[in-house]
Structures are given as structure tokens and as C-alpha cells.
Length: 640
Image (cartoon, rainbow, N blue to C red; front, side):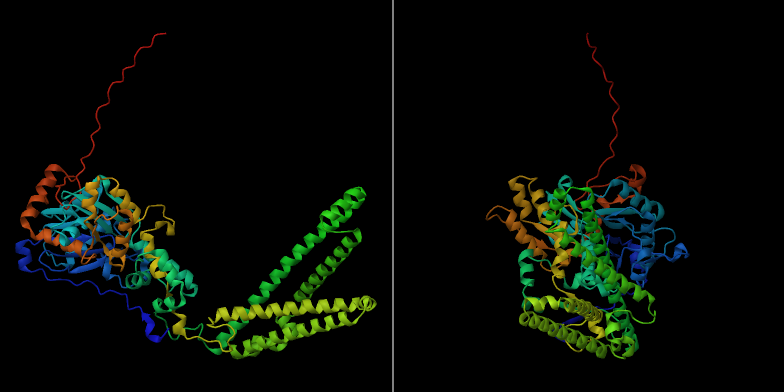
């Protein structure tokens, strides 16, 4: 890939929210405040604004030991990753449940809008909520707004329906709304301008899950950058580079092609400190790494030898136990046991036992000599055979690893020559000569084992060196990589794997149906005529709907599930992230509609906090169920 293919991550810090002027026009006209209270971002503005004045993440952070008045909200948090463990939100998934945090959010909103009236907000509030919001939590929200902020009236509406009416005001009579959120997705059928709340479905997957899954994929792919791949950076990469595959399996097959991979894979440069040590450090620091490599390899080989010794001792003890059976069992049983173990005679068993004893004793002697040696010396085949390969005698890793590779080649040549000499002796000598040279043969075998041990150590040292220094091509003489390349992410199939969880939640272990299966289930709840009305106006909104390819994927899924040659239409919101606020603003500027359907303070005081006026944007009010008095149970007398 060329240098122009490397993308950078900008500074993800946000500017603190500005404090706006509270003009006389806003105060005298009592302009409504429009709040899109999303679980990811909160968007706030006056009904007279064309776009929200404030957009910030719906989170708060308070340093320990600080006063409650020093709580930071949204964009005021300079570095989210530094205080992520302190972050709090008022949401439990997509429902507001923590109203002490919601109060901090409201304080932040009203103070930055410049509202200066003491102990009251004398403006109507138009506010979004989630579909199917439990009545109990809406009561708490009304209580907070009316009792604490003394607002004159409040209008609640479903965020997805505000977006629907903003984009499709003439076709909103019958629609099937797909609302993609930060924590959840909703399928909302609308018939005759009203939502069918009984057939609304929720899927507990959203943009937050995509971000977390993408972060995990990149951390597993680049384990040396685990700390650098933060949730904020993964979120940025998701918005910038991920897309929804129209056909997931076919797209994966395309990525398997090397040319396609090179063309579509993105290299992303993470920020780094040019003065940091590590891959490109001083020569002394890098030789320390080489020294540690040798120590790790030696410890690994010693562990293998200990494991082998334990296995050999166990096998030796088993064979000795079998040999002792001859004293307690008859000869027929003993011979049968020998044959089951693969021995033809007791002499062969004795030879194997003696050879195992020799090997076990040899390994024990090597361990004893290592423990008695000078602790400053590196006890290994490397030190015993080639003292000049000690990393402490080198100043540059390249020179040291070249010497190690040279020693490895020498060992290979010696082993080949030794094998050739052995074959020549076996070929030229007769049967009698072979028996005479049996004793030197053991010496050759011992040398072979010694060469094998040292060769194994050389191979492991070279492999560890290449992994440690992030070598790009095996077998190259020069090892080196720039620190910039060390801090680069490779975005390949992760671009489609992360968003695919919207359609296949099982990828991350969530046992729920995906978008397509849920759509098909909702369709099955209606008559064919109603299905046709809904299918001809499938509307998609919510921030994750900004992912490229999501409309094409939904069209593909609908084509597969709908009857042959049946019509359907998928409409994507013009701005899936902002259209909920814009739809709520359109509602707020219609004063007649606002006065008719908003909950006024008098309604709140007279009818209670659970009172809700239904309209085309709202949830369905659910009256509390009053338990009926228990009926007297009359037992019929039984005749015996």
C-alpha cells in the first residue's frame, strides 16, 4: 500500500459548549425548548433555530472529592478515556432511570441556553422519549420538570416518529419504522397515524455494540496496540470506515482475494510519541530486549526438558513395575502382558529400561551441572557451544541475530556431514564391522541430540526475535520497522464484520433475532393488505443508519421475505442523527398543536404525573391497573 492510503485519526476532543445569550425575544415569546434526549447524544435548541445549538454526549463525570456543582457534562469532559471509569449516564439502555443525573443534564442545558429566570424555566418543553417508555419513568420526568424547574407545559413524543413526520409527512399514515439506536433497535408499525404498540419489537443491539465489537476485533488483531485502541477511537473508525454488506458471505469471499484486500483495506495511523522507546530505541535498550529473548527461550527449553524428564521417569517406573510382575505372576500372564505392550521378550524390555535409565540420568546430570554453575553465565547450548553469541558482547541487534543465523547454518551443515559419514560407514562395513562399531555409534547419537538441542534453541531465538521486533518478511537480513508503522491499524474485514451484528446478533453471543428476522415476524402479525401498506413505506432512522449500505441490505432482505413481485419501498432519513430533533422542532413551532396536546401544569396537578395526552407522535397512555375485589369462592358440597 502506498503512503497516501494511510489514514489518520484526528483529535477526538470536543470544544466545551458555549454559553448563549438569552434574548428578550426568546423570553417574551416564551419560545419552546426542543430536547432530543438520546441515549448517545443530547441535541438541544430553541424552536426558532434551524439546527440544534448544542450537541453533546449524554454523560457526566465528577472527580472524587469534588463538589456536586463541579460535575462535568458532555463536551466539557476534556478527555473521556482518562475518566471513563467515572462516567455516568441517566440511561439504562434506552430508558431514563437515574433522574439525579438527568437533573445535571437539565442544569447544563438551561444554563448554557442562558435562561436566567430564577428557580424556573418559563418555556414549554418538547422532548423525545423511547417507544414504549414505561409510565413510571415518564412520571418521574414530569415530576422533575414541573416540580423542580416549574415549566409551563411539556410535550412528549417518540424520537423515531418525529423523524418519520419530518421526512414523510404525507406518507406517515401507514409506515414501518426501523429506529436504530445506541443501545437498542426498534421496529415500529404505524397504522392510520397511530403506532401499534402491541406489535412494536425491540432488539437489544445498537451502535454501542458495534463499537465495542470493532474495538475487540482490532485489539485481537493488533495485541501490541491493545491500550491504544480506545473505545473513542473505535467509535470514530466505525463511523468513518465501516459499512453494511449487501450480501455478507459474498462480501467475505471478495475479501479473501488478495487484490481486493489490497484495494479496500485501510491503514489507520494512531497517534504516537516519537521519543518513546521500544521498537526504535537506543542500541543499548534493544540489546536488553535481545538478552531477554535468550532468557525466555532458555526458560522455555528448560521447561520442556523438565516435562520430558517427568514423562520418562513415569514411563520408566511403569516398565519396572511390569518387569516385577514376573515375580508375582505366572510366565504365561507375563508373556501376554509383554506382547500387549509391544515387547517380544524380557531381554528387549530390559534393554529399553536400561536405555531409559541412561537418558533420565543424563538429563538429571545436566540439570545438576547447570544449578552448580556460575549464575552470571548463561547456561544453555548457546553458552556451552558458542560463547561469542552472548548478546551482552554485541552493540546492535542486527549483528547479533546475523551471528545466531550463521551458527544455525553451521549446525545444519555439521549434522548433514555427520549423517553422511554414518551412512557411508554403514554402507561400506559388513555385518561384522557393524557390530564392532556399535559403541562409537552411541557417541554419534549423543552428538546428534546435542546438535538438535542447540539447533532448536537457535530456531526459537530467531523466531522470538522476529516477533519482538515486528519483522515484516521472514528470512531478511535486516530487521527494522519505523515507529509509525508499529502504530498502524489494518482495517480489513472488520469493516463489515462489526456492523453485521445488527443482522446477526449471534456473532457476539446475543441470542436474539436480527433486523431481518424481526421485520419478517412483525409482517406476519398483519393481514396481507396491511402488510402491503407497511412494506410500501419502510422508514429507517437513527445514528447507526448513517452506515453506508444499510438501505441496500434492507432492500435485499425485503426482496427475500416478501411475496414474488410484491412492491416495497425503503426510505432513509435525510439526516438520521438530527431528524428527530428537527421533527420535534416542527411540532414545537405549531403553537395550536402544542397547546392542544402538551401536558400543562394544571393537568399535571389535577390528573397526576401519569397523565399523557395521545397524539400522532406519542406513546400510548397506559392507565394503572386497579385490582378488582376478590370474588368469594363458593365450594360445592360434595356428597359422600
